[in-house]
Amino acid sequence: MNLRRVLVVDDEAIARMDMIERLCRMRPDCRVIGQANNGNDALRIINERSPDLVLIDIKMPVMDGIEVIRQAKESGQTCRFIVLSCFEEYTLVREALRLGADDYLLKHTCTDEELNTAVQRSLQALDNTADRQGKRQRLCQLLLQQMLTLTMSHEELHAYISTGIFENRVGWYTLIQIQQVEYLDSFPTIPGYVTANGTDQAYWLLLCTEQADVRPTLARIREQQKKAGEITVYLQCHTDLAGFYQRYSELRQEQKGGVSRKIRQAIDYMRTHYAEPVSVETTAQSVGISKTYLHQIFKAETGYSFSEWMQKYRMQKACELLCNTNLKIYEIAEMVGYPDSAYFSATFKKMLGVSPLQFREEGEAAIP
Image (cartoon, rainbow, N blue to C red):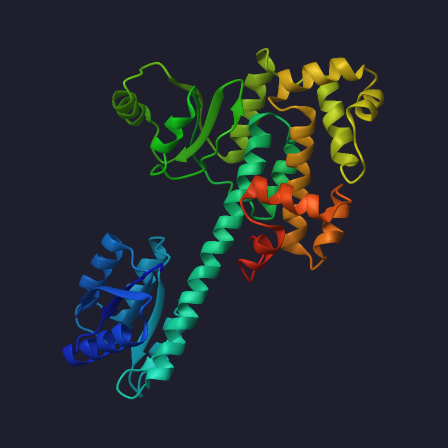
């Protein structure tokens, strides 16, 4: 069972203990990780222990519940809030709901059923948020891999930014090349975009951080792995995501790994005809080269075989349709070039880790 971490905050000790007792009795999926009698302590515990759910009184000494919610949200905390109030505090309740609290309870009179319903609603909202983040992460990984192989146009990137799939934030963008996949596990605590793309035994990580110097982190990883020289900073620049891609594209074009005009034409053809039975033969014919030559240079320049790239692009389009339409799975399969919906579903699950139906149903909202 995935236990949910709960913090109870109230300046009345009796009210705190009553809430804790009822939660422990009714919700075996919840574990109370702490309690506080004022807002300052509550905010400290939230920042230190990141609870999933906070039951918090509105009126308290030192710092009230409204300010706790406001500061927690501003600092990026994702915990859900249920406010505890008295009859005469409706103005404060409205403010708490405006700031993002899920519900309010009259702490002296709420029934077990009301408490249980409110907690269930908050935990469901927490699950939906996590599901949306998971879907966004999987889609971003597919798209970032296209960026790193220069198979995404600048126009497409700007479209993904304008729709909110990518955050075009300013920061230190650092592209790191790693020779062995086990190094990837050393990076999960670094904030920002992180993706891995295996090409010719090399793995790439794109990080966006506030700090310019990532060398201390790399040095620690090298020391732990005892293999200095296996990690290389390929590119670093202070800009936004669109600016990074422009700089990266220019650098790759200056080097041998740049995508040639023929491959760009082939990719444009594949993007246009992905819903059809696209083959190496038809694509090669469209750009005026032999299928054997296209096979060779496509892998060399993009890091993917022809079929791998086509599969990734079709899955990307399927993700967009699953998020933004109510089309049936077999209809989406046909629209992205898979007349066999069972094969489409198996391929989708292999690539993204969930079935198309799970991908659609994990969250109530589409990717923001």
